[in-house]
Image 1 (spheres, rainbow, N blue to C red):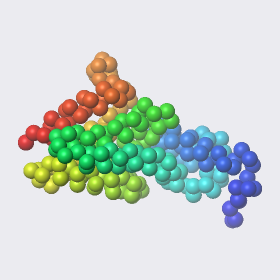
Image 2: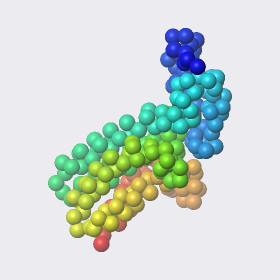
Image 3: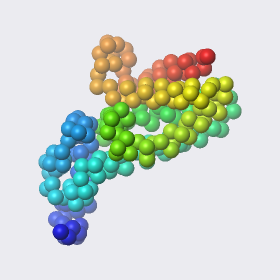
Image 4: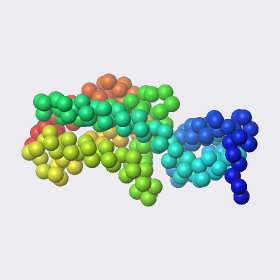
Length: 217
């Protein structure tokens, strides 16, 4: 069957239909997980026919990937900019702090950035989802910049073994993912003293704890 061109679609379905579908799907995936969402759910949530979702994206995975394609470039650019700044720092202690900040801050900001809170939850879930390796999103979109960070950690901590460097990176990422995915437990257990929505406070505490651990043998 021949696909309709955008010119033949109603005005309300041209131009904004793709964005409306992605926005609706982002909320659904954050709430129900990848496996819990169907193409029909996405169509109903975005107020368009199922056929239009298929036309734009081919299927559920296409919609899911589109969410990452719209969000990841900004996160990666922020990380790369932070890493470039860290590379200019001559003091190893200060460089390590800048490396961790470049890793953590772009992700933590997702919790407080209007319209991006859902993506933070989706990303945190995708990292630990058994099906993520088959989808290949993390490998394709995040592994290249991850390798750059690991190399900078290796150069900054030359006394550490390769295994220690990789575990250091995973420890930072694991901490970040847990905070991103939190839906109230951190505040509940701390009676509000530890609030992940307080980005500056969260970053300050995480940096203090992580840097203390990485600097010690």
